Image 1 (cartoon, rainbow, N blue to C red):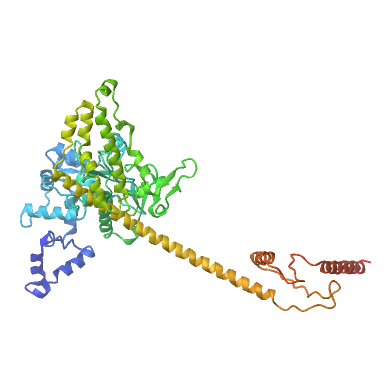
Image 2 (image 1 turned 90 degrees about the vertical axis):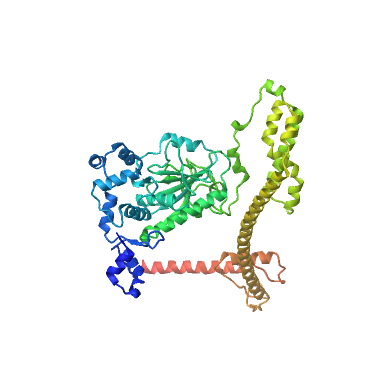
Length: 556
């Protein structure tokens, strides 16, 4: 490793014109694999000119138990690193010192810092202050307790799946390092008796939501949970998806084009981010705008119906939740059961008051989903409901204790609190209304396009029908020559025999004839007239006799 200044002096001397081109030269040699150079703010002043030296620096860290006793003094710290991937900074320094790894540029601390930055930039390690994380060394399994905890959470999104044609496992390691280092510290590793980072699952805390990223043989899976069992915020889910897709796009830019293809989809029924369910994968394009359909993957024994809104509501901006989807969050265990002694202490006058508040709050909830035209007026009219709703929990306690006086005191809200509440509600309602209007406009535009195409097809069909009727009218009024030698009706016109290629043309003419009065003496038949049938029989009899005579002559 050397500095850009020293390298420029050695290569170009005092030629200032060439020194300004050093960045382009280094980028070229980096692209062809001769050296390592990144034009980032904190790395643009150094370059690694010995690739093998860099490889050895990382190789010396990922040792096995057979060699660890010879290179570290504190075997316990090393074993913790071997199991979890978390390495103390002092242990890293001891390993490099014991291995006699050369760190001599500027000073030992500066070169070590620069070397770790290169490793982090390549997704090999997440650098911390006193400890670092190397994902490829993590051997912790995501156990049964962790799985049961995720299963117990009712408020969660569907499992978003990024399915790859070819997925190197180290690519997932690079993604985890990117989540730790390139999310502006908004994603924090979840802690529960240690960091919740496992061999194939990583759990993050983002805006009081649990974000789980998992990997299996061919896909990376994403799911968001809300531990408090309130509804997952859609804006959080959209932001998380955008972040992960952005990181994937950036990481895939370093690979060959043939392996950077992945398909976005969902688990149709299992919804377990920590498990691989290849038989449950549905592509996103096969679900969008389909509503409720039979699962294309399970049509018989495991037959079930999938709903577009339940799978896509959190991950797609234009998908609106179905109210029936909220039934999963209404658990019977959340109801409060009162004994007879508790019922005797209930102040029913206050209880009726609470019932009215709940009814008004429910109406206000539907007003939020379907906002009226005059939003400000509605909020003003519901001022009392909003004010009481903020103190609903305290009123429940006062109802149990039978204290109306305490209810009235808890029911008071300052003007400042009410103003903040109104401002917050107005912002949320306007944002919700704008999202729904945008989605509605998009659906209306798509519907209009479909209607226009159908109208065009109908016009084409009608035009074809008119053309056929015009041809029929010409046939109807055509002058037909009479046949004076006919023994059937000498005064009748000669019969016109028509053979149709398309049956629909024949049926159209017959239908038109039934609804139209033909001129006297004209008729449309689907068989031959009687005299022509008689003539056909005579010709057939003559042909038969001629064939018999021929056979007798050939076989006397």
